Amino acid sequence: MTFQAKRDISKKLRVLTHGIKSGNISKTCRYFGVSRETYYKWKRAYESEGERGLISSKPCPRYPKIRIPKHGENKILYVRRTYHFGQQRSAWYLQRYHKIKVSEDGIRGVLLRHSMSRRPNALFSRFKNLGQMKRQLFVKILKWLQGTVSSFIVMIARVCGHPQQVTF
Image (tube, rainbow, N blue to C red; front, side, top):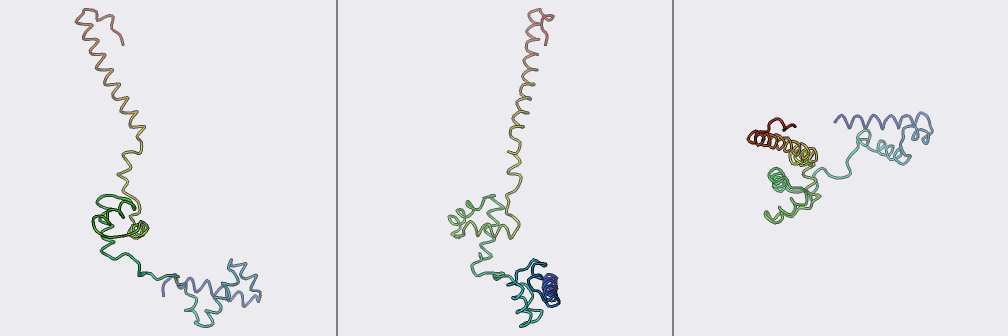
């Protein structure tokens, strides 16, 4: 039995025993934040199956029949790692070049299962501070031009014989 199952059982047993001891189900449900319908559902499950009936179960199977096959998952991961496509473009690429028809949501599910739901940050870091990069580049060009132009003017002034008149 897992830790989560034990915790579910103890919580539900606490609610059930409090309800039996107090005799007032409405106050018990209000106190624990549980609806009366849920309380009675837990009570019926406990009476019929014992503690096993109090273990929470998921409403759907862990591996549904409509899940993408393993080779399809591998192709989706390959396309993501190699081309860094998003969901829509990956679906288009797989259908066109690999004859695998997968919905965008199916691709999203595969990427979430493998913790690859976001594209690599390297793609976005180039454009993160584009305005700041443009300003820095512009300042560098101006400084370079200023130094080049000023040295050119000083050189011309020296050739012409007027070095005292050139000031910056």
